[in-house]
Length: 114
Image (cartoon, rainbow, N blue to C red; front, side, top):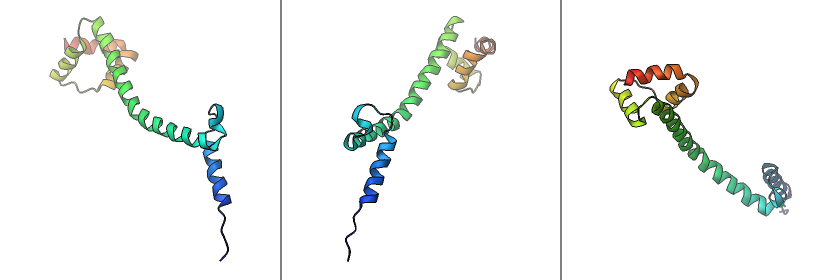
C-alpha cells in the first residue's frame, strides 16, 4: 500500500488559521504557533464577552432609568415598585429607551407611578 502524505490538509488547516488571525498584531498573524494560541484566546474572550455584554447593557439601562427618575424626586427602587403596583409591565430595556428618546412620555409614566 502506498504512503499517504497529509501535505494538502496540513497546509489548508494552517492557511485557515492564518486567514482567521489576519489583522492581529506582531507574530500572531503569521507565525502558526502564536496564531493558534491567539485564535483560541480570541474564541474564549468572544464566548465570555457575549455573556458579559448582557450584564453591561442591563446595568446601563438601570443607570439611565435611575438618572431620569431621580430628577423627578423618586428613587429607582420606588419607581419600579410603583410600576409593579400599577400593573405596568414594561421591561427595563424599554423603560431606558423611553427615558432616553421620549422623555415627555417617560415623565407621564413617572407621574402615574407617583
